[in-house]
Length: 318
Image 1 (cartoon, one colour):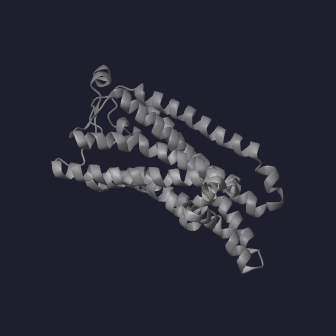
Image 2 (tube, helix red, strand yellow):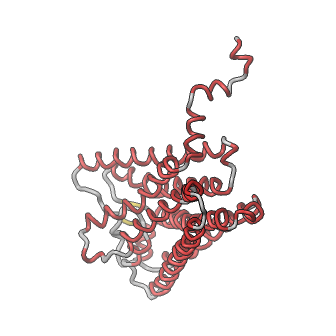
Image 3 (cartoon, helix red, strand yellow):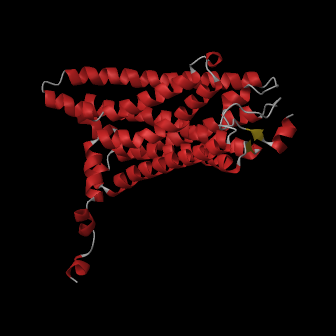
């Protein structure tokens, strides 16, 4: 069956057999995709253009926005194409590519959120050493290490998955996902991939424990600040990151920690859509609404006064 799968590809889960609902789902996904792309691009542009945002926290946020764009671009365009063409087919190569790149961006998200927690810890708990510890070279090295680790991990995971033979090509998901493909395996290599998955869960749990422990230290330090204004200022830089971490944790728990035997297929599909789309959709709104620096930079970028300020005086006089 492995050779047959490699030539025939896979069949993904259908959102609805009704053509009108397929078209409705297409336009819904298209709207969500455009909002995600534009929202994250706006975050990237604002951070890149405003020199006051050229600090570690926003450098990491810009990388998170890049990862969010990549994550939804792996899954949504193929789903929209299938909805438009009334198809559920995905080729073997497209399935391999989806799993590889989706894992790269998801792994990087976990890594960058962990790094951002460390950044907030140093900024609040050890402010005198902040510029020394979180210098430009250190930030670039940590980000590069996160990208390299994500690529290597994804390559190992993808190779382990597609070294298996499959007894069926019907994937119970709207995109190629490793847990769903493992259910189709009829190979002894299934146990190897199970080991990799278990290791992945342990690593992800370790990241979340580190983040939680970091915020316990942060809150302990903040409570020692004598002024309420100082406490509010310190917490305001942490709340967006904490909200994003909570969003990833809650959406991931819905998908992977909920007993699927007790969930209807339709509800399972809804949870999967939430997990794949919601974090990338809400991240720009969370940071733009909670960060005064980004709000100020957005206002400066969008106001007509700032637009005229970028025009050479020669043209304004004429």
